Structure formats: structure tokens, C-alpha cells
Length: 575
Image (cartoon, rainbow, N blue to C red):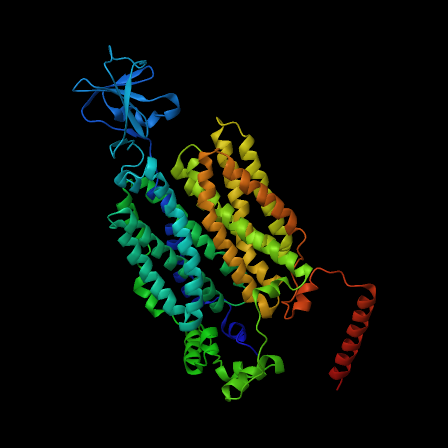
């Protein structure tokens, strides 16, 4: 008997587990919120250099009396804005410099005389029709400081990477609940503190810390809900934690539309999941963790509470779970509790993922799926505001399209298989990216539809790779395989913002990169073995044999062995 028997006796997903699940997943929306909040926090509106006391403005054939009239339509490629001040000076204003005309005759747009060029010296005029305040407008993160604004999201993603490593390890040491409580409290504290950071450097540091605790919560909540739900519903419950993340993206879009001042926007986003703090301290530790740490009395109390809450009369005893099913499962645990040393286990390393050419190829493909899943996910999400049309609607749709993708993914992977779901999803994402490039620029709606299709497809692949990785590797290196894949996922999330910024070089370059990689990796995925309906492997030899067709000789032997076992069972069944 194993700890998994708990769910056979007390229910795989009854009232107790459902309450815990939806409460824990509610806070996961905060992770989606903070991951994508920078879309509007660091948005750079149209801007030009500014001079005081402007009385007249020329921009091409247009005339006016204020810079604000021309900023929404200003494009530096079409030439500068020409202004005249109350002192009679005439200036040609572009984004990062201002040119003073020397002895102009009349006030015209064209001028062939001498000019004195000056730097803007922190004097900028911003278009405030869309964004009233962002950190860019407050701290003038433009021109020579423009790279500072672009550094915000990569440093956040670096915090995500470090947080996953730190809190994932701590959760195994001090418990899941303590980490969930700590990271939830810090998400609220750091999130509000970001709004009052005061300067760029405090802002980046606080966002980095916020990224660490957000990533920590997201990593640990996956483990928490997995250890509280039975195997019959575990695929669905783990996949739909991603759905809570997608809801967080939708909240960002809605809040960004309603609130155009960055620090108010940040406070609202940080407090919208604060009710979780009032009841997270009531969360119990998972039975798996309590049993692993030898806290059998606490485990028994928890099982009694679950049985009572679920309305089940049967009282499951912890001692029944400790009873070894066979030597392999039970000997080590019994020896440890008796104080007897058990046989030393072979230490495994990441090199064991490359133990043979077959396993090496499998590992490289799995890592590539983790990487492109994360890269594509964030390129589609962060780049949605550059698609044209309404940027708030685009971001909302990016989150909304994920919800059906997880439903489709769950149904498909349980019916046609993991490989036959993952590979077509990646190929579809690649094709969608390439089609975006060939769509005429004036058909914005088609580009948006293709982008949503790409996000839908990449979300399916990204959602199922967790389970697929577990099934492709044996027990002895399964955690190592998932952990290393998660590392590649974090690398993809760090690279994603830089990929989005390549749109400054060519607007379709991010889609081209993601499209080519997704298509190639989709083809490689077709070479992976199918794991649907197959038991989890325990040894490297079993894992390596996945996908191999058994030889006729082995098949005949297998049939003969099966007949022998069947005959023995029939004889044992006779009185």
C-alpha cells in the first residue's frame, strides 16, 4: 500500500480538496498579474524634446498651438516638429535632440539655414492620451536611458529563475504551506512597495524580489495541489493552475484599461488577491510531506479531518499506509524508522539524462519543448500590445484564449496521446507565426487572429510538457528531468523580452524566430515515444525501451508468459 491509497479511500477530488484547490489557485492569479504587469508599467508613449513657452507648432502641413495636439500622430521618420516660442526662437524638435534655428526668416516647416543642435537634457513632452503616467514618463527612461526601461522585464524574469530554484528547494525542507504563506505575504508586500519605489533602481530591485516570490509560489502551488488531489483528476488540476495564470493576464488588461497611472495600477493589481492572506494560514500541510518527514500523528489528524469534511465514515489509519507492499517499496522506509542503515543509493546527476544516444536525443528534444513553450508563451503575451488595434483588448484576448486551450489539451492528450497533441500544437504555432509575417499590414484583425491562434497552440504544448516529461523518464531521474526542463523554461522566459525588443529592428522578427523554432521542434517531437496508457517506468532500461517495437521473438515469449500466468491464476482460483 502507498500514500496514494488516501485518495481511493477519502476521494480524489471531494469537498476538502476542492476548497483547498480553488483557494490556492485563486492566489496563482497574482503570479500571472505580476509576470505581465510590466506591459503597461514600462510602456513608452510617443515623445519629443520639449522647450518652454511654445506658442506655435508646425508638423508637415499641419499647424497648431500646442505640442500635445501632434504627439499622438508624431512619427520621427516623417521629420521633426517645428515650434516657435514666446521669445521668438524657432526649434526643430525630434525624439532625442533639439535644433535651434539661427536667424530664421519667417516661420516655415522647411529651413536651410544654420542650426545649433542640443541634447534634450531631461526636457521631454509625452503623449498622455493613452498612458497618463508610466515609469518611463516619470523618470525619463528614453533616448540614452531607453535601455533601462527595456531591462525591467529581463531582470524580472531572472528573479523568476532564481525564485524557482530557491523556493522549490525550501519547500522540500520546511514544508509546502510555510512557503505558500511566506510567498503570498511577500507578493502583497513587495507588490505594494513597488508603487512607492521612488526611483528606477529601487523599482528594479523590488520587482526582482517580487519575481522571486511569485515564481516561488507558482512552483510550490503545483506541488501542493498535486499532493492533495488523486491520480484520477491530477492531470486536470495541474493543467488548470495555468488557467489561473491566464486569468491574471486578463486582470492586467482590464486594470490597465481602467487605470492609466502606473503606481495606482500597481497598487490595485497587488491588492486584488489580498483576501487570500486572511485564510492561507489555515492551510494544512500535505499528507505526502507529513509522511515523508515521519510526522505520522499530524498525518493521522489530517486524514481524520479530510474524512470528516468529506462526509466519509471510514477512518483510514496511517499505519496501513506504512505497511510495505514489497521489498523495493517498503524495506528502506522500515529500516529508516527502526534506526537501521539502508543500502546507499546511487547518486544520479544530470549526465544520466544523456546515458545513451537515444536518451540524449530525447532529453534535447524535451528541453527544446520546454524552451520554446516558455519563449513562445511570453513573446505572444508581451508582444500582443504591438499587434495594432486596441492593446488592452489584445492582451485580454491573449489571456482568454488560454482557457479553452487547456480544456482542448486535456481532452486531446487523454484520447489521441501526448505526442500527437504536443507536436501538432507546436507545428500550428509555427505556421501561425509565419502567416502573421505575410499578412498585409492594413488587415490588423487577421494578424490578431493568427497571433491568438499561435498563443492557443503554444499554451497547449506548454501545459502538457510537465506531465509528458514525467512519463518519459524513470522514477530514479524523473525529478531531475522535470527540474532541468523547468530550468530551460526559465531560460526561455529570460530570453523572451529581448526577443520582443527585436521588433525595433524588424516588426516581425520575434514571430519569425518563434515560428521557425516551433516548427523545427514540432517535427522533432514526432520522434518522441508515446506514453498514453503506459505505466510509469522505474529504471533507465524501461524508459529507454519506450516507443520501441518488440521483436517477434520477444513478443512470442511475452504471449507464452502471459498464458502461463493466466493458467496459474485460474488454478489458484479453483477451490
